[in-house]
Length: 307
Image (cartoon, rainbow, N blue to C red):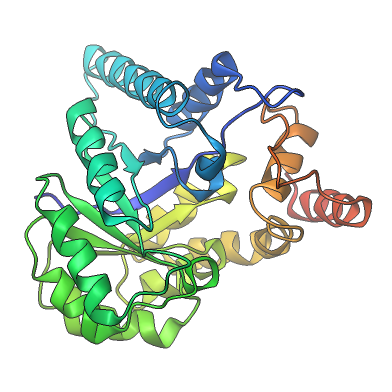
């Protein structure tokens, strides 16, 4: 199992004003990512508003188009003599273990490289329940990225439990969005420094640099929906030990790292994308467009960052 390193975009799902999916714009946004040098793509995550999508008619079409565009681009690169593998990490989480297994199996059947599986949310299982949830999805046979985000799920995965999960077959790493850098460092110390193929990816754009400096492997980014080239450059500079370049980008982008979540996600990043002429479109209820004050914050941050 190869180790994931780099910048990976948690893709928005573009929508028309009536809430239907704009599939042609989906292709446009994916092509922008690929041409921007992004290391991999994450469709059907939280940023993609997956809880509001139809799991067959909409989700499967989004997956198929994403894989089609990635494979076509890989062939273009190979024809130019610059071959590169671009991993596709499909969101496959649920708070029902049976459904999570089904979604992971779909990711495998579609030919995805990884499945991103979030901690079961709302029902707040015990640590043993979390372990058994990942034990079941690990049996499917596709590399799994654990997604720890207590702010959305109501359940943090303690490092003791993640240590157990990491010993399961097919567990490839963790997207760490706890917001707790001390916990992230503990994960690196206790897991990835002992298991070199286990990746630790930030789930927060603003923590990309600190996490890599502590031994992490990259970012699953929201901000890269707008600027894949910038986030890729920051991430690669940090991974290569060029911290002067990484710091310059990190601090230049700080205002937008904050503004990209000023009125929720993906509402804020979608507004920024639309403002800059990218076809992100609107959001589906229960999400609504960002309020006027937030729009001004986003616009000001974009200007301050030179975007």
